[in-house]
Image (cartoon, rainbow, N blue to C red; front, side):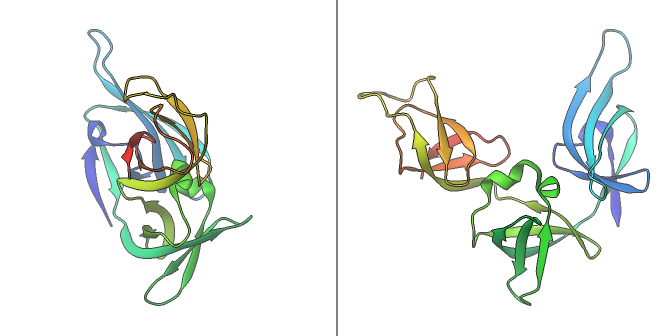
Length: 188
């Protein structure tokens, strides 16, 4: 239930099988020090225990990537136990913890259709769309005549996440945000 990749092909957010456990990669750095061999420094979270782990892999090391099944599910709500999703075909519900969702938690809106990743029968994460449209609920007032320059201001979105936006964005505007980088893309 897995395929293999070179350590240099790993990306943030991928789920790998390492030492008979599943890990989600949170950060990846390819380091090439002077005249020494290059290596990949990984920061990853164990999906079963939630523990963080660091690992240094040689560039030529082969790492097993977990093959996941995906089901389209509807995000319902969040409570003290986690985030709840429902299969739109069978009405079966699953819940994921904030640790399993990672930074994607700030881009979930109720009734949004999301692809939930399963390893066997166990839900392990979600695949967010490349961009989401969210409403700005709080930001400082815009400057009259402001144009899209490289000046940015913070804006709080309906899900509670804060992103930097151009000065012409005001409260009530709906903006498009990149879910991978958390950056403002455009007005929606």
